[in-house]
Length: 87
Image 1 (cartoon, rainbow, N blue to C red):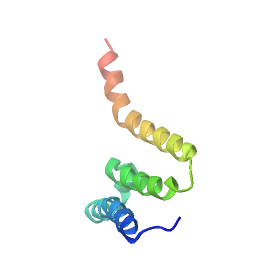
Image 2 (image 1 turned 180 degrees about the vertical axis):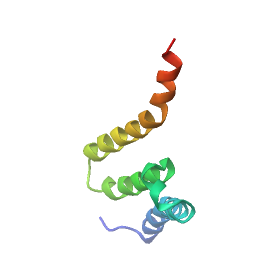
Image 3 (image 1 turned 90 degrees about the vertical axis):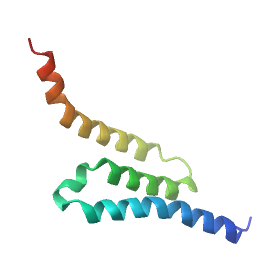
Image 4 (image 1 turned 30 degrees about the vertical axis):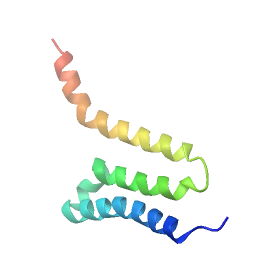
């Protein structure tokens, strides 16, 4: 099946949104904080999903991404939760 030019434009437009998000976050944050920026990570994940959609499953990427996001969440929230649970 030959891909129509309109489909190419749609795919390019879909990829431009996460690319713009990633570029904005990189330009607006210090380098030392980029590894834990949720919007940057979501933009990179979105780009990976677009790239892997044509090839099939990306279960490993999803699992690793969710584990990393859970680690970031726990790193930031666990001290507060433990402080609230102490008598």
